[in-house]
Image (cartoon, rainbow, N blue to C red; front, side, top):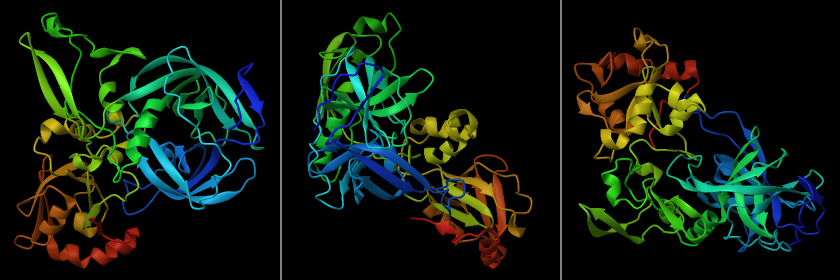
Length: 443
């Protein structure tokens, strides 16, 4: 690996003989959760991947989400090869790629990890010009704290770096180095404030250690909630009213770092606490909670959404991926009763082991006359049968009562009735009129 000299200004251009980086070119198509039978427009992304030991390349997970094809490109020669996504973790936003040509990375010295970054350190962001020249931009680590990553599930250690980063066409994933070692990957960048949030090396190291085991387990969660202790009486038994502990490297930081960065799924964590002024110890078994284990999954990527079209009524299983179709401000702009269900799903559905089936919209048809404006209704029963999944709905539809398919909802109009024979007779015309490849996808 070529040594990285200290920069004299905001940017320094270096022309190394060998890089520990490769370009990563990705094409793909995201799924459309509003029209679940189709995909959205194709996309293409370019990024830089960090070459690691074992012939693998590290990138961010959102780079390869919903990908159709991934390609690696040598910066110095332009040589290309296809690549496979071998491990992806959307919660930590990290992914490992492997070239189809096992010799493709020969000659590139793997990057080691810098695990000792602290506030005040200077990191260099690595980018490439179109000519292959390496551009280094220095920044200062101003804060190390716990933040939410794009999957918005739990909190992870994050470096905040003040840096004047310039856009380049391969900047979707940007490595940051310290003393020739990989210190972090770019997570998000605020052009206005010139501040980068970065996925730090300790989280990367955790991901890589997990990736050695098959099947990949993922980061653990404790399975409990907490809040700051402001009450002076409760504070008599609290070590820190904000839930912080003193880390030997970072100083005061939220205790969730002890779980996500330092513990692994399957570990037993001794929890020392005070109850009624007396010390206690509980042994907490840490497990990873898969996205599919939630009643309303927090993310759904790389897989087509399930749906069922019944006489023009479109039913889906509620997910946060569906709510994100309302954009960055989905928590305010999406239908609030569905946002409420997502936010308080643990309290609303304590037994779990189910999905929330929603009537999302209506396609105008003879069978749906009078229901044109109906949308965003939660389904309780169909033909008197309880519905806890789309599969339940599809099965219940097969059993009309007195010739009608009756759908009971939590919200007004409370009940929708469709003529079963008319639904069946017009099914093929519905497919043709709206270009539907199928009236349902249940698995």
